[in-house]
Image (cartoon, rainbow, N blue to C red; front, side):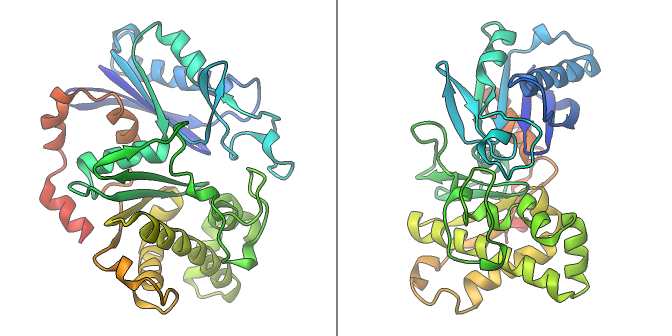
Length: 335
């Protein structure tokens, strides 16, 4: 048995699986207060909940994979998360009810696991790994996964290899600077002003709209001009980011997931494709976009879960797991 934990900007989800698939799931909102180990304790409690559902002892777990929002920083020689959507100490404008500068992850989890294997990765990197094994990036050697949710994150694969970087932070393109979307320019939770996350992340959109993002998109669907301005500027920022990925890394395909995007992909995906491939927004470097594609993830409800589990999935389980995701069906989604 293995466990996977997905730590996002607003929720934690855990699952337990065997060679046939997932057997139990649990989720909860991310704790926002307490000491910097409060989130790790909540993660472990969710795994225990899953084990109770599956009627097994948590001691029976062979390994645990953790996909966590970042970026990561070292803390006493082990990885901690300095995610702007979790750590209120990073920016005075965050509005978070804590003064954390980082969230302890690796140290408390290793202590609880008592020597059993733990794999910890950026959530976008883990999601890319899952899409490469089972989803719309299957067979792609040069690709990226972009999560568009509370925050903006990217996982990168070049020459068939997941790119991790010196600190496990490769792909934090959500904190890269773009010149677009002046209307939404505000300070990111990381402290920067004008990065992609401050222009298009869910928290930024809620601030710009002055209400819930769901209300924003409802208004956008009704054709309200104010909503069109906010969503349009966010789309410009994401399009600029994706364009930069294509021309910098010579990618074949970018898969997009994340709660905000997947809830409104019928609107957002065509608009992104139009900006990238049909408009004159990027008149130069057209050859770098030839043959490139932007697609939605194959199964939005499972990408994050699979990403965490794939970090510790035994190779011997791969054939049975792959049978759950027929290649023909996945190829049809990516078309």
